[in-house]
Image (tube, rainbow, N blue to C red; front, side, top):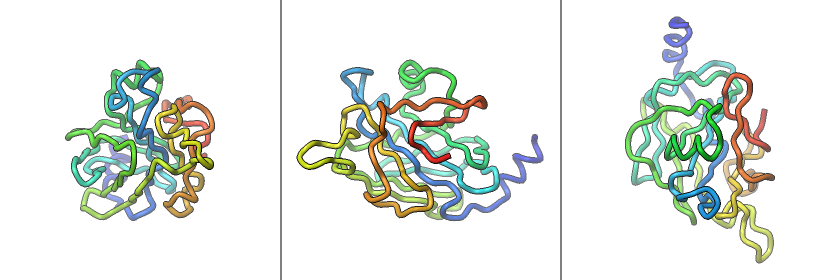
Length: 188
């Protein structure tokens, strides 16, 4: 196991090895509790190698979240959440959460940009989402405070509004038998 972790840490990551896959930027706080305590970001490893997330950073330009030691297996998902206790109370305890330090980058409920950096500062992924993504006509997007998250449709597709949609069901990350996060509508 130690050999696998050391090898995973030595493999240099490239853009696209880890992607931002789902964003709960505006949870239904009226149902679940405080909005900012239930925000979360799901990342996905589409590569064929396990990747140690230690030293990676997610930033919105104001705050930084530094990811701790966590080996994200090939084809696996992981969740970084604002508040572990609130997340587990809302979604259960079977999902293994990715440890982090720093100041939670409170996700804006309108427009925000998230940037995922590798340990050496390389931009791995970035997204600038908007509350209008997934809106239908004059109806607001279900991801804008109505309990849905924004989900990436195709991990290899463009990172713009054409490749993101509100989750089909109330955003509820669940876990597979190994404890990896799996959400309805996510690839895999």
